[in-house]
Structure formats: structure tokens, C-alpha cells
Length: 281
Ligand code: LIP
Image (cartoon, rainbow, N blue to C red; front, top):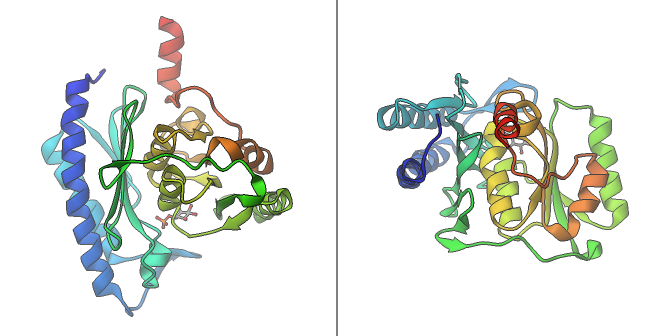
């Protein structure tokens, strides 16, 4: 089913309200969590009560408002189909669990083969990023743009770590970036790492494997803010995850070479949608 602009308008308005509500649940959880014991799902993989609470709230609100849409969440999974909401209830859970106020709620809406809407909110700083395909990206309602940095010696990028890929590949990419002259950071919240590329606080973000809930909203934001990205949806669709690269144009080639992640000029389409587009072209 193809969604028209009006149907996407309705979801955009809904998403703005949903983001505010989800952020206030996340903030209350963060304040309660301070100093409390933390539990792990696996090595370095934190779980807090708030992840489940936020995801369940978001899932119910979406099911009430748009029962025809699919859902995929970090905690509860789901069967997304071709038209779906993709939700990370708390991205940066390790920070959240240690009372570091660098975490967010990230929500993306996928339809017509591409990410149509993205929203990322840091509840502590009250910073809300929003993007819509073809209509730009904003921070608290103001348009944002990627940085104009093209001198590598002045650049600062972030390289996220994923335990799902060999450590040697991660270390080698970081080494190549340092040798090229960048400053490399790691903030442990991939979605905010991407949002910071979109608003020019950072010049690039890469990670050798990310899940769709961590990165879809941020990838849309970076492209809508004038940045370049690698392919994501086009690689394995929604459920397998893939490498992530997003950067200001001035540092994109250096980051692509260092990480081995290709740059992608076209719109990032789900594999089925790309096939349909070729068939009808
Ligand atoms: C994590 C990110 C982290 C990134 C990992 C993972 P979680 O998500 O925030 O920065 O490197 O790939 O996605 O577990 O905090 O939702």
C-alpha cells in the first residue's frame, strides 16, 4: 500500500505528540533510576525497567491511532511489514543506567519503501530532533544543517562500537581515522550521535553494525540536514541491521575509506521497494 502526503501529515502530527509523552516517561524513569542497581541482558548490554515501560506505551499509542501500521521495537521485537514504526525506547541505555544524561527516545516511521519520519528526543536537555523525507530536519522546531568542516585536522567524529563485529575491525577503523587527523569520540548513544551530525555538533558517525531502531531516525535526519550516508535499508531491510555511516560532505570520503562503509547517493530504499522502482522505471 502506498501512503499519500496527507496520511504522512497525520502521522507527523501524531509523532510530535507521542515523542513528548514518551520523553516524559523516560525522564521520570531516569530520575527514579539514579543510584539504583542495574541489570544486564548480556555482556555490556544493559536493561532498565524504563526501556520496557516506554516501549509498551509507544506500542499501545500507535496501535490505537494507526492499527493498520506495523511495529518493531528494540525490547519486544515485532513483525514490521512494509509500513511500520521502528522504536528504540531508550537509546544509550548504558548511559541511562549510570545516570549519564546522554540518552534518548528514537522513533522512525517507514512507508513507501523509505524512512518517512524520524524523531529523537533527549528528555534531560529537552532537545527534540525531527525530520521528514524531502522536508528537512529541525531541532526544537528550528532548521538544522550538517557542519561545513572539510579540514580533517579540524574534524571531530564519533565511532560507535558494536560487539556484533570483530573488535580488530573497530580498532583498525579508529586507528585509520586518527592517522587521517580526526578527533574520534564515543558517546555510547548511537541515535544522538547521528542527531549531532545532523545539527553540526559532530562531523560524522560510523558503526560497523547497528540495528534499525538505533539508526533509522538519525540517518533520515542527517540526509535531510544536508549530510551523506551509507545504505542501510537497502542492505538487509528492517530486521537484520547493517553498517552505518553518516557524515558532513567534507569528511564523508575519509570516513568511508577508514570504515570500509560505502557512500550511497540514492534514496535508501527497502530491497523490495528498490526492485519495484526498477520494474516500473
Ligand atoms: C546502543 C547504542 C550504542 C551503540 C550500540 C547500541 P542501546 O543501543 O546506543 O551507542 O553503539 O550499537 O545500539 O542498547 O543503548 O539501545
